[in-house]
Image 1 (cartoon, rainbow, N blue to C red):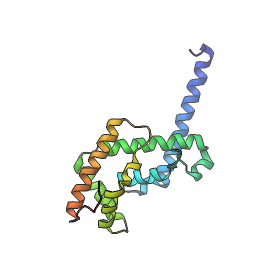
Image 2: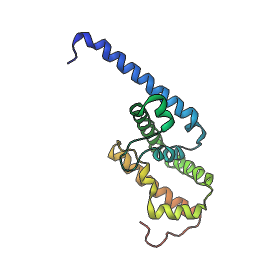
Image 3: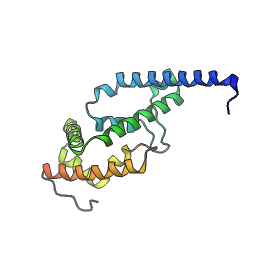
Image 4: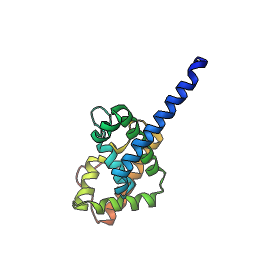
Length: 162
């Protein structure tokens, strides 16, 4: 229970934090996310900002302006929002988005797909704080999409693929 005299102070603090989170979001969208044309590509980018050992997001330029704690909260929120946008797409939309991501890569698409089938790097794109059902949908859809794309590119599954 908050003492009556502190309710306004907590509300002001919450409002300021939300405004600061919005500033971080606006800066990130303006500087980075707006130039990434695919939802899958944004997930790849946001995951690259997360330390795989600690799960903490780091963006040194934003941290200089806003501090590590605020940037961590903002990036985690943006990652979850982007992830949920991907999960909410229908399979046809996901296929088109993933196809656009693939053709934007300078690497051989066939090699990329074969590597994905073996190493499943897309598993790292899942935010730490998501619902199990979201993870299940994401992983199931990725397997279906890989199968579709492998078929489209005329690729046989490599030895030892899952």
